[in-house]
Image (cartoon, rainbow, N blue to C red; front, side):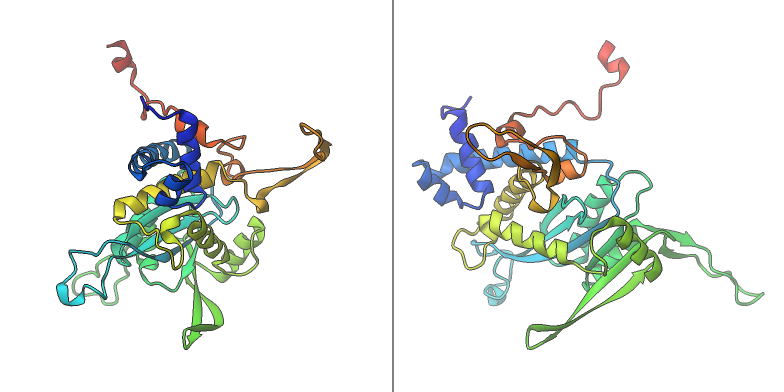
Length: 331
């Protein structure tokens, strides 16, 4: 029902996913920014539905989580007037990634609090297959340990110390299979001078075995989530360093992140995931034979078998979820 050709809408949304700001995209396509913003809101809602439908029941060996600082272009009116400058629309973008397939699992916009860490962990746990408990790694931010203990814990009865008196209350402790390690960065005058690690849940021997078996990294690290943070800042115009294309509201920032997340997972080939073909394949035209098979994070996670185009994602029809019951179909 749009008056603008569909190809123009696809290209405009792809420009936004490639890191162009809203007004820059409007200047490139010689249009008003308002319809492009409307397309972004509608596409972000659709991308969230598509991602929830296609990404589920994941068997992951390890997960890395981190948060990156963001700034909104609009002042936070909820902040006190005397602290308006200090608390001026500061947000944190919480992200989780699978280091093996480079799949971006979840993304949350909020404050740097325990509640936001709980929400990110809840979204990641909802994507895992039943019984899957991967190795978690993060920085030394304390709420991660609380969030993991909330989702992967159980009540443990405590033994009696004395024969008389009330029995001790059970305690909430982590499950035996939970493995969680933190990377500790030591800074001097704002610069990282030393990096160490510590194991909070599980054992070091089990963590080293998981790292060796997965084939990604040999030591406890957060290098993959840090690299993803760089890709997010390059692909989302509102998260760039020293830019004027800041998002005005939380919803605007979430819309850009939802669009980029689906584009990154399904449409953007990752150079670290490509496979060498056994025999070079011919290409159209006079180009050199194709030696590599380009793969996206969704292909590496066995969620799809091809590199999607932006228009395919936008035209993808999500079937009813959950499926209709036989009684409802008969009615």
